[in-house]
Amino acid sequence: MTTTQSPAFATIPTDAAGWLTRAREVATVLATDAVDRDRAGQTPHAEIQLLKDSGLVTLLGPVEHGGGGQNWTTAYRVIREIAAGDGSIGQLIGYHYLWFWAARLVATPGQIAAVEEQATRERWFFGGAVNPRDNDLTITDEGDTIVYNGRKSFSTGSKVSDVTVLEGVLEGTDKHIFAIVPSSQPGIVFGDDWDNLGQRLTESGSVEIRGVRVPWEQAAGYVGKEFQPRTYNTLNVPLIQLVFTNFYLGIAKGALATATAYTRDRTRPWPYGGDNKESAGEEFYIVEGYGDLQAKLWAAEALAERAAEAIERINGHPDTVTAQERGEAAVVIAAAKQRAVDTGLEIGTRVFELTGARASANSVGLDIYWRNLRTHSLHDPIAYKRAEVGRYALLGEIPEPTWYT
Image (cartoon, rainbow, N blue to C red):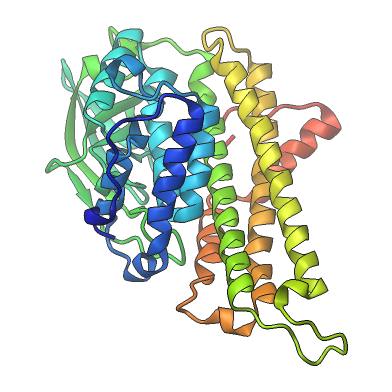
């Protein structure tokens, strides 16, 4: 894709419906050559520029600074639309929204206002180097400055980002500190080693952090080198788990749309069944198959919408959210995620049965959907999400906040 393929966007939308229309327009552009770009595996600079030009990167930004002023319900729907066109870019925009919101989760009011104004006006694209399965980055205190050092094996989007969210532990303490830093600097060195089955354009490779300096005043949520915790700080994990859920659903939606279009235009009816049809659209097993998959996708989307409603309720009173509210939202999100994974993987596999042997040609590209979903759905074991729901259903227990719940 080149930037010349991008449509001209003279204005930004003013309501949720307009933003969804904008997302569909962007997804249409992405879908035209998603397979070719996946095969090439090139860094998605043009794709990120498209997200900026369309205004989608400012969806959650304040209206007074040129942002969309939208809520997470709209953001999740936008993620689904973008992922339907290109799963990798759906993941990138989803992670961007989470890291854009990171200041709201942990920062002081002054920091939130400053970050959101600059990020919105300048249309920053966010990346993050916060993989919790790795050792924490080490932070040293040098008076007015803190210094980050270490390595993360995954840093989704950071290479194509304007800023990267770092997280580490202050040396000699148990204090975790988040900070937003420029991505293009000598102290951030990307490994260029993302070489996975799917989600190939997410730039999720490793990163070395070498002496990245941050003023204490930019340590998110810290005043006088002390942090005051609140339950809302822990909403980052439910938020991003629902990001996962929605780009999984978008990938599944894209698979179903591509498959049905192929069947209508190219699949041939089977001539040896004894009840021969004139077209594939008259074949009972094909019609029944698409009906089954569509119903399952609609059901999974409805559960994701219910989960988004739980997030909105919490965002309505972030300073007073309780552990019970947070836990019950996490359970619904866990349920939505497992449904999205199971449904998406089923769609990604069964579409081959409904499109026919010729649809397995590399030029068709139906493989991209299963590969993308299979790759990212291994992010954390889905069995643990099932268990979270099970413990709530059976024992009334809510999950304790961790880096994955």
